[in-house]
Amino acid sequence: MGPGERGQSTVELVALLPLLVVIGLACAQVLMAGAARELAGNAAEAGAIATLQGRDPEAAARDAIPGWTGSRIEVEVRGGTVLVEVEPASLVPPLARLLVARAKAHAGS
Image (cartoon, rainbow, N blue to C red; front, side, top):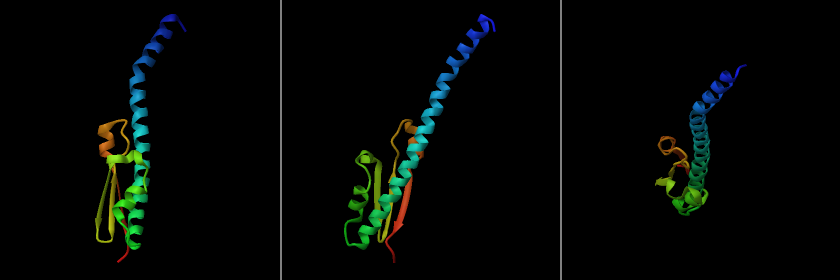
């Protein structure tokens, strides 16, 4: 391998680095969306259980998830049904807004 060929592979590597970074960020964002989905499901179930126990379902749903979600959670209660939406933490904000997790739990009839 001559010196020109080594230089070419270095240039190719440098040209690919931005693409690799974007792919890495997208993969991390998808993992965060999976975590948000789990959190939304847990929060919806906690809200439904609170409804059965005569407690505030919205407060129970918000208390069931970590504080970092902050303003990224929306809870809606319709009768015995608790609907929860959680927007994942955002490394790539446009992608995070597309990957909002939604969960629904029923407290029974």
